[in-house]
Amino acid sequence: MKTHYPRPLSATLLLSLLAPLAAGAQMPPQPDPNNLYSEIMAGKLSPAVKDHLARVYVPNRQSDDVTVIDPATLKVVDRIKVGINPQHIVPSWDLQTLWVTNNAEGRTDGTLTPIDPKTGKRRGPDVVVDDPYNMYATPDGASAIVVAEARKRLDFRDPHTMKLQYSIDVPQCPGINHADFSIDGKYAIFTCEYSGGLAKIDLVNRKVLGYLSLGKGRMPQDVRASPDGKVFYVADMKSDGVHLVDGESFTKIGFIATGVGAHGLYPSRDGRKLYVANRGSNKVWGPPRGKGSVSVIDFATRKVETTWPIPGGGSPDMGNVSADGRTLWLSGRYDDLIYVIDTATGETKTIASPKEPHGLTVWPQPGRYSLGHTGNLR
Image (cartoon, rainbow, N blue to C red):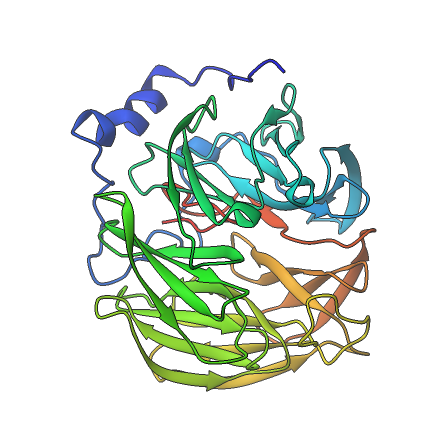
């Protein structure tokens, strides 16, 4: 299949994006060295997204399409046909493409579907890659990281053509899944869903630094770093809460109970809170109308300050926060719904999105560049 190349960028934008690479593949400097969320605050939209449509993109795993929602009207405005088993909508490092990861459930015909955020439409044909369950980007923008979950492997690819650059095998990390990155961009911590542990990846020397077990019967899901980058918060679907892991020493230092089936993690726009989507079930394939909720953790105290139950029960899974910080958007994976949650009150509205909505993203979001997933911007 023909490989897709995104449309050319303006000369000014291209030079600004390539500057860190020309300097020797260094990540862009952190404006606030003590707060890695300083650039994702409300109002800090990059000039690179000034012409992008305000939309919410929802991959529906079982119907092989993407629901497109206008957040101003809460109306579905389009459905985009994509590949087999779409899992996540991933903003590219340069913020110019939204990639749909279609992993075809471990088969060899996985694909990435490019969506143009300026039009909200597909941009060219799918790109064939092996088992793209999830996708991230190296902090310097030099590589897209395709998380080949079924292969226990991380495939580093050219971020535009998706040509394979190199791979890192993670044999002791079955179900490799979500990740976050150190504040200096030198390493990443990935969750190992089916072994109950984590893998620490050296991005400089391209190797596994080690594995950490979180305990028997654990099932880690999403992971996000604290604002100072020192502590990694790891949601655990079977422990009903969030593990705290020291990134440098790679040791567990605490646990915060949240709710049934803790799954997705999203920092607030002011970088002070962490929203935890509790999926309402400890099972991989849970029932509808479970004990779903959203817990709000205060980063400073490391305590839950409030929990918002989903009215009537539900299955809040993955998503992100609106650009202004006022709304948390989450997929309701086992209820074929999208939850639109007021971050001031917890009031919840719903939008239908069949079948089995998963890793949705809100676009555009504040930030200088994207580390992937459903919008891990910095």
